[in-house]
Each structure stands twice: as C-alpha cells, then as structure tokens.
Length: 288
Image (cartoon, rainbow, N blue to C red; front, side, top):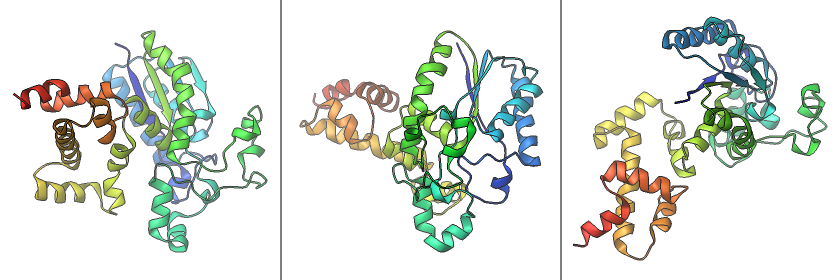
C-alpha cells in the first residue's frame, strides 16, 4: 500500500517573533532546522522510502523538505514545488505581531480571523508593495487568482486541484509520497482526504475557541463526561443521528447531512464503526 507523509515546516523566523507570515517568504530559525532534521531522522528510523516529494514555493517549506530528505538519505528523489501548497494568505495581517493585532482588534476578532473556516482576514490591496503580485515566483499566474487574503475554505479550494492532479495519481500508482508544506495547507488537505465536515473540523479547534490549552480541555472534558473531547463530540453526533433515523421523516442521506457528514457513504461507514451496524439495519432492529 502506498504511503503518504505530511510534514509541517519547522519553526520559522517569524514564528519565533510571533508574526503573521502567510505568503511572506521567511527562513527557518535554528530550531526549525533542528526540527526538520529530526523529522528526517524519524523517517529513516521508520524505514520509509519515498518516490516523490512535493512542497510549496516558500523557503521554510522547501528547506524543511530538503533537511528531512537529506537526513533520511533521500535527497535525490523527484521534487515538485507548487504555489498551491503555500500557507494560507493572511492578507493585511501579514507582518504584524499577533499580540499587537489582538490588542488592536480584540482577542476574539483575531481568533476568528485565524481559526474560522470561512471568515476572511482584512485583505491586502493588490497595489501594496507586499502583494504577491509583485513576486517573480508568481509571475506566470493570472493576477486574478493571486489572493489578497484567504480563509481555510479558500485554501482548501486552492489545494484540491493539486491533490487531484498530482498527489492522488501518484498514490494510486503505488508511489510513496512526502509533502512538506504549511499548517493550513496541510490542514486543508487533511480535511479533504478524511472527508471531515465543516462542523467536525471546527470542533477539532474547540480548545482554541475556548482559549484553553489542549491538555486543560482534555482534563475538564474527562472530568465532566469521562471521555476525551473527540469521543464526546462523536457520541453526541451519532446519538442525534440515531434519533433522526428513528423519527422516520428523514432519509439516510438527509440524516448524514444534518449531523455534519459530507457524504452518505462516509456517514454509513462511520456509523457502522460506532454502532456496530449500518444505519438501515439499525432502524430495522429498533423497530422490531
């Protein structure tokens, strides 16, 4: 079976300085270089051999890929760079300190810009000297598709064509693929590959939405419900699905959409894993 490995770039210089980065091309910090080399060491230990590498056109991701491949003895494999794997564009926030932005606009607003699925940040004007339209690496792109800012939804729409045209065909051909990119472009790809609904996806960021650390959230959820947040949310969704199925007014497709699944087939498969039977069989058993 073909293997797919995602590596988020190591700490960048602007990560270290707590600045919004997006499409701005900054280098790895010393810690970021160490992180990339450690990733390569772990790949070597795991014995994973790659046939194809993909990365963005931004230095921090390219260097992360090269450090990881060099450390694992695979620097020679074919490599493709694409702007479609870039980090999400943070618009006019790029270059600004995150703490300063929170002080100016408020923690809640900045949090929405950073983590919301479909809310855009303040857009960067195409005539701004920091616009990607002035960057030679995007010279062959139609100016109309160079973003002034992106949310996760737009980032997802950007990465899907690259997945379908390049990565997915390689995997279908049995090739092992490594992708070194960015937090949000990899997040978008994961959402698409695993068929995560918008509702479930934002729920995965519950700790951040509550301004809590992940460990604090897990502790509190465990003390209240006796289970981790992901399990609790899954249980609530499937309990609701059961009620809707037994209500009799909705089809399985309608129920799957109502509880946040993008497709009936994925809902049915997930339902069987959780409930031990397919939705239609569950209804029959309960009505006997």
